[in-house]
Length: 226
Image (cartoon, rainbow, N blue to C red; front, side, top):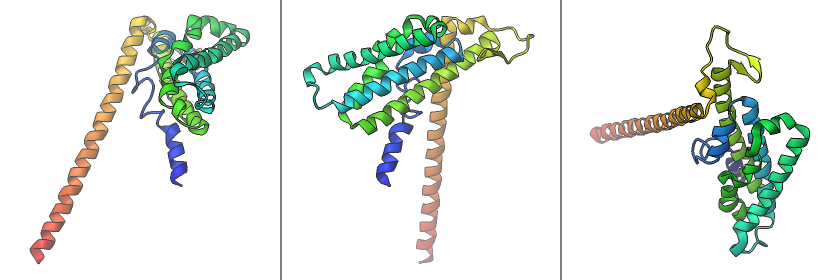
């Protein structure tokens, strides 16, 4: 039971506790550049997750055979291989989407999120744990990009996934789909995330203090009765 709980944690932690965007602040380049729409954010996140998952599986499987002196070079070669596969498949099957994402698909090879998970986790754990870790971080990355893409697309274009969701009377905020809008949106989201964390800590602290006072009062009453 404890083992299953630990395995589930390897996936869940990537959704929030070590979310690549809101907590680790990794992969900022594609996050800021491609999230002008939900579709772009979704495509980039899926391509990144594909590379992350298969790189983690391969590196964790052969981690004991990779010399420590060349591990970073070996990681980059493995990552670049799967980035090339993702780029070629996207160009062949989704040419318009590939054109919209531009050079940011090939640039996945230098995404700190992927290399970081190989160095920190995949190279030190078995394939199952590495798979769950990669899926969790990929899902966290996807959630962040979809949220950012959704906000920017709705406010900046009045659409969501290409469908109109706001009335024509609403004047689109064009700045939101510009680079400055990406920084503004990300900053606000990270601010709300930090506010939530601080509020949760404060509530837990107040609950702990209240529990301590209740226990102390109970103890004082019992001592007084004696």
